[in-house]
Length: 401
Image (cartoon, rainbow, N blue to C red; front, side):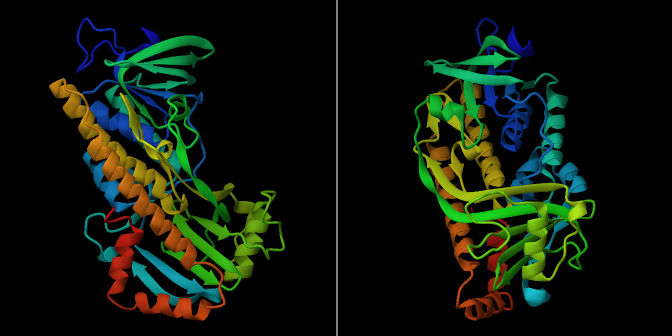
C-alpha cells in the first residue's frame, strides 16, 4: 500500500480499495490540526506535505481564545501554553511611549482570557507530535499532489512522492494547501478578491523594551508600529511601510533588518538591536475568498478557502475554527454512512471569513497616518477608558466570529 497506509481503518470496509478515510493536503497548522482532530475521532488520515521536512519559520504567532478552546478538546492546549507566552494586555501608545490606554484581555471570559503568543514551528511541532502518537505514519513528507479526480464514492490523488509517481484513494480530501492551493485550482474553483496597497515588514529581536509581556500598538505621525512579546525574551516588531519612508521605496521588498530597526526607532523611540534579529519578512495584505468551499468530496479549509490580513494570526485561527466544523460533518457522514452535508460549514465559515476581513479592514483604516490623528488618538483613549474597552478586547481576541 502506498505511503505506509494504515492497516486498520475505523470506517473503511475490509474489502474496499480506500487507502484512508481522509487525505489532508498540507502539513501546516491547519492541516495538522485537522489530522489530530480526525484521528482522535477514529478516522484514518494521511497528511500529504510537498516539503521534505518541517519548516523552521515562524510567521503566525497569535493563538486566540476560540482556537484555544478547540485545542483544549484535542488535549494540546496545555502544551501550547507551556511553550507560549500569555498576553493579557495590549497597550496603545503614541511616540515616545505616550500612553493612550490599555486593552485588557484578562477581563474576557476565563479560562482563556489571553492571546497566546507561540512560534509557528513550536505550534506545528506540538500538533505533529500529537498526530504521530495516534498514528506514527500519518504525515507523509515529500508528497506533492499532481492530480485530483473524484467519483461518487471517493477521491483519487495523483502524487509525486520522492520522485516516484503514486496514487492515493480516500473517501474525502481536505485541501489545506494555502492560498496558492493546487487542489482548488485543479477543481476549477475560482478565487475572488484583491490585494491592498498596504505593505508591512516584520522581524524578531531580543526584547530590550520596558513593555514586559504586553503587546503594543503605536499610532505615530510617521506610521503604525505593532509589537508582540514572544517566549525566550524575544519581541516581534511589525511596521507598516509608508510612501514617505526614506530607507527603501514602497514598491520594492529590498529591505533589511537594519531598515526595520531604524523605522521602529524613528517612530517609537524603541531601539531593536539588529545583531539579535532571528526572523525577518515582508508581506502585503490581501482579501480573497473561494467561490465555493466544497466540491463533491473535497473541502477547502484555511487559506485555500479564504485569505485575510495575516496580522494577529487571524487566518490560522480562522482555519482551525473551520476545520473543527468539517470534523463534525465528516464524523457524522462516516459513522452513519451518509453523504456529507456541507451547507452549514459553507455558510458559517463564509460568514466568519467576511466578518474577520471587515475587522481587518477597519483596523487598517483606523491606524493610517492621517491629518486627523489627534482626533483618532482621542477616540482611542476614550474607548480604552470606558466599558467599550471590553467589547474591543473581545473583538481583538476573535470572540464572536
